[in-house]
Image 1 (tube, rainbow, N blue to C red):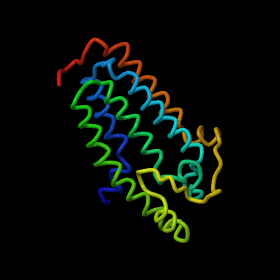
Image 2 (tube, helix red, strand yellow):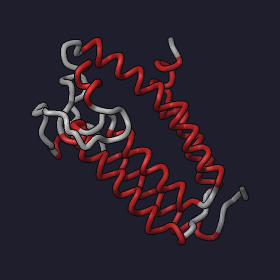
Image 3 (cartoon, rainbow, N blue to C red):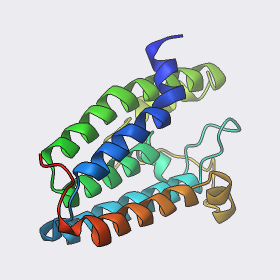
Length: 184
């Protein structure tokens, strides 16, 4: 099993101790509350929009946000993570977020794109050539592959991310507002 395959399978499991560590280091830094809220809400809005178009293993999703960028779910996740890092007030949390995304998501994206190349050999190469992986393009890919569906959002279980955000923010706001358990 390659590193990319391994990290794809275990990235959520690896993330659990990182989240616990971040929660122990975090404090609520109200100076960044507005920026944090904008990043987190914007990131989740991107994730919901993406999840409403994503038909995993069925078709090559090129509609909605996938017209501008190939990995909008991961961009949304990154915005959420930096939103939490901004309000958590710890340099260690920033380093953990950056390391996690570099060490986990870049290999996962490469692995997933290889799967898409094999599964959609007539369509994915052109899509990958025209649509950037991480930085959204203003030149939109011509596509009618999918239309947004709340049912698809639910099928993709995006409610789990919303619940996690609410719990995380409540924890920071109501419990950690008195400072970290450990100083950084």
